[in-house]
Length: 464
Image (cartoon, rainbow, N blue to C red; front, top):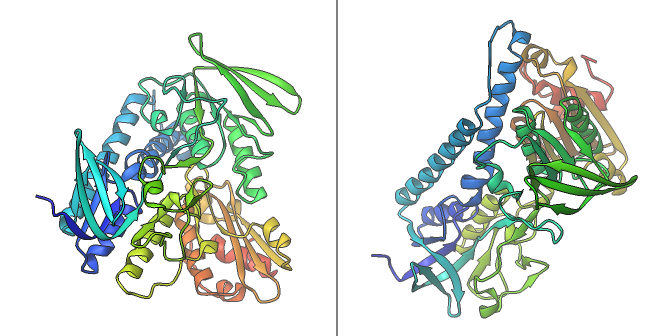
């Protein structure tokens, strides 16, 4: 039997919710978590984890397809689309079971059903047509987000799809149009292109991965075009005709209207928050432009109600939600946590080559009025990258010329998503460019490029 009263109830079990619940339990709180679908939320079940499983399958297939480059002969390698999908779902299921284990280990009550806020610090949970009320001293809303839907691109789940369907299609499409070139768009473009689907990316902005440094965008576009991906920037899908066996996509470009034929259109234009139907209006929680308004510790305007993750200000990233959840419950428990520094949040895109960045782009730093020292080191000059057959890309560091502060880092290349944490730590510790140059990096590694890029900014680079 579930208790009816808790110290903390968390609504939503994604990387914000379940992490918050575990930290609250560690701090001695009696905790329950409410989940309407699967423990782990979108991230573990339909986002971060299963997509990386698909991308790994694509990566392995690419290695096998280019085995001769490594002195290995492989005959008749084929991509088994259904096998890749099956593996991805298996990985996701395993991670969700892992969260179940963590809930039991930390003595957290799991309440399955649809949670809704009620006045008086209560949560109503509906499951199988039955409604049950639970109360708590503090309630944390962590309901996350879903694929954004554009009026001219209505998702039907068959021919116009979003990321969930893109990783569970029954049959590999021969032709796909990807609308949007953020992380989701370019990751799926890479996956499907690598296994033989003809892919076209349509991006409204003037370059792909538009939030990244311009040099990173150019480098990825060059690699994608070389791989056979068609890229249409400064373009907009105005309509999709799904009447026939496939899709007829109308694209508005600078040069005029263009028609594309494909089997399926993937809408990857961003994230919408899950705020509807969870009782925010009923209890008077303030929102603005689809986000819950909170203070530095995620408290809403309603006493005892908190919100974290995609539904509040800041980037919609799993690691941000987790960090917010920890800060939130530590504050509730009477600790004195440091507010999250949103200027030092790493962003990672797991296409091939990978992209990782943190802080200011070169353009943003200039616009902010800084005098800059910029250093760039190409992986073509890296011994480890050459040995690995992964010479595409570079590390670019942006420093304040006056004080040597590391303002931003931008990487594109193999394994750079594993390298960016060094930069986040360096920025957190306010390390200067010269200190980074004097930090001995192991040889041969891809991470040497960080030291070399810092040296390049100060005209001390050795290997270029």
